[in-house]
Image (cartoon, rainbow, N blue to C red; front, side, top):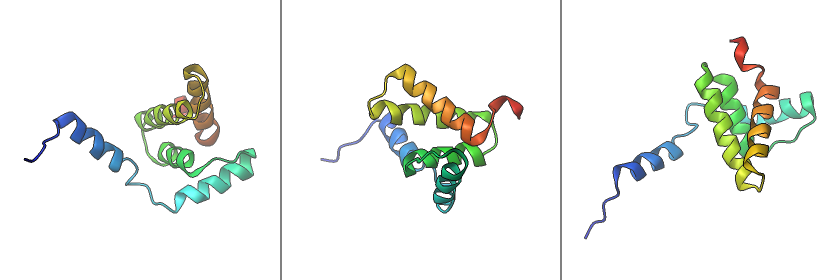
Length: 102
């Protein structure tokens, strides 16, 4: 008997799988180096992927999505909800710039 998943789980898996597909993979290490040189901060590949997403895609919704993803990453690493939200916004602001200037 074939088990069928509900539509929500199928959509969720697809979104996770295709999350950063439009960003060239070469940009991630370049941004890691750039952030290290500019701010003296070492970021891992997972965080750098969302910084690249926020920097290279037009529109504030991409930045907001990157901030939410970073919040989840920081929460999974043991930070509180408030601390992870503050860190995520600060990382994106430092790396990309002010969101209100567009």
